[in-house]
Amino acid sequence: MVPADIDTRLNARVVDVRRPKPHAIFKIQHVALQSIRHFLTSKGFIEIDTPKLIISATEGGTQLFSVQYFEKTCYLRQSAQLYKEQLSSSFDRVFEIGPVFRAEEHNTTRHLNELTQIDIEAAFTDYEDVMEILEELITECLRDVAKKCSEELAALERHFKIPGSPFRRVTYTELIEELQSSDVSMEWGQDFELHHLKALGQKFSEFFFITEWPTKLKPFYIRPKHSEPTVSESFDLHYSWLELASGGTRVHNKELLISRLKEQGLDPKQFRDHLQAFEVGMPPHSGWAVGLARFMMVITGADNIRECVLYPRDRVRLTP
Image (cartoon, rainbow, N blue to C red):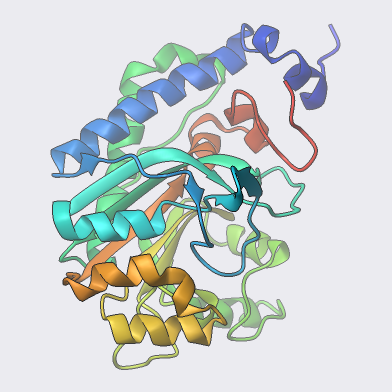
């Protein structure tokens, strides 16, 4: 039997998922989502459901899909970010698992244009606090999958080690120095490109956090460090070279938030509704977002993110 390529399989997805390996991936995903919801609920988070249609961009730098909404134009959301921030002031700890949309012209094995994201926001926390929540969630979820999905993991010929806590933390500056010492060209203030990530993957084979990114590389709602404003209280979670999550301490001061919006070329008037929430009092808060399909790539060992989505939507695929 000649194996079919990924496009042929996706074109007949309802038949493809009857095969043992694709079937196993989505049974594992079901267990993983149950585990994630149980863990977050046990930590005092409540599940929320926020709009998928929005009137303006959540953050700069990412293009939006526009939608005709009666007589107006609106957009498919990039994230639940602003809503979950607002609601953390009322419910303290919130999470959402839902779709987000990115109108980016990537065509890689790790990017999609419609994806499911796991978002949390927690009041009275900083980025260190929510990093701890994230690593505990990852560990607990992997433990549940290993316990409940032994047959599915065997079908995938997948074996993974439950990581210990805490995960390794490396600052952005330390990684730049690490790359430069290995003769990989990169200057402070640049974002990591694929060849940089692959080089890091040679040095880090498991989960690790990249912390304290340059403020200018992060969205307007990420808080700069008080002692060094060019550096932010932020992090990305990686598994080897693959980015899984991003988060940090949020700006909870209205004047600073307006300043950060202007720094990134955004008009505060477009964020009027969000800024109103800060007028009635916004507690210090932090959060993160995890891409579900990328996390599933780690759990299942899939090489292509499309393997981990039932009906993927990428730059060229809108069917089935």
